[in-house]
Image 1 (spheres, one colour):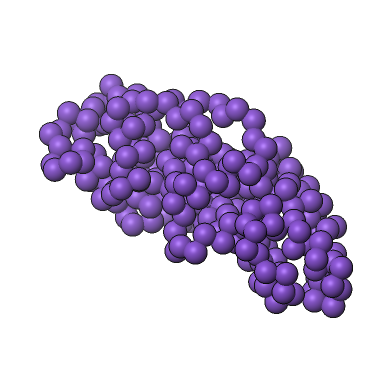
Image 2 (cartoon, helix red, strand yellow; image 1 turned 90 degrees about the vertical axis):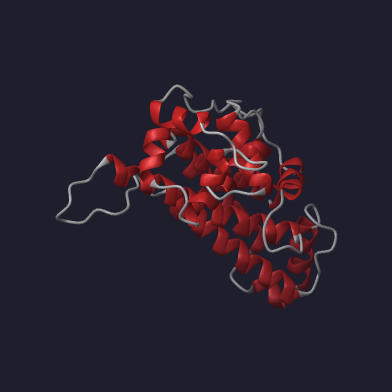
Length: 245
C-alpha cells in the first residue's frame, strides 16, 4: 500500500468522525449544522437542509471509492486474458484506464464540494478548488522526449487549422488542446497543480473517447506521466478532504 493511499484512507476515517454514524446527520440538527459549516469553505451556497447534506455525503463517498479503487489498482493492465501473454501494451492501457477511474473520482468530489453548476469541470473551477486546499509546491512534470521517432513524426506534421496535427489526431479542443500542445508539442514542463489536473483531464478525454491508444502511449513515452498524474489527482483530493475535518 502506497503512502498516498494510506493518507487517503486516514483523511476519510477522520471525516467520518466528523460525520458520525451513517445517517446520523438526518436526525441530529447540531451535527448537520457542523457539516454544513465545513462545506461553506468550498461554496457559500451549500444548503443547511439535511437532505442536501445527505446528498453531498453520498456523492463524496462515491467519488472517494472511485479514486481509491483507481489508486489501489496495482500494476494495472487491460486487454489480456489467460491465453494471451501480458505485454507492455496491456500495461500501458491499464495506466490509461487507471487515470480515467481516478479522474472520475476527482471530478465527482470537486463538483460535489464546489457546486459549479456545470456538467464538466472547467480550468477556473479546478483552480478555485486548489486555491482552497493547502498543497505543497508542485514537483515539475517533464514533457515526453520529442526526439522519440514515433513522436517526432507527429510533431513535424503540418498543422491543420488552428490546432497542431497531434491535437487534431487526439480530437482535442479548447483547454484540452491547449494543455496538450503546451506539454507535448511545445515541450514545456508542467509546473503547477492546476496544469497537472488540466493535463490529466485532457489525457483522460483522449483515452475515454478512443483517440489515444495504448500503442501511442508506449511510442510517445506516456506511461510514467500517466501514473504521476493519477497520484497528483489523489494528492489534490486528500488536501481538499482535509478541509472537511
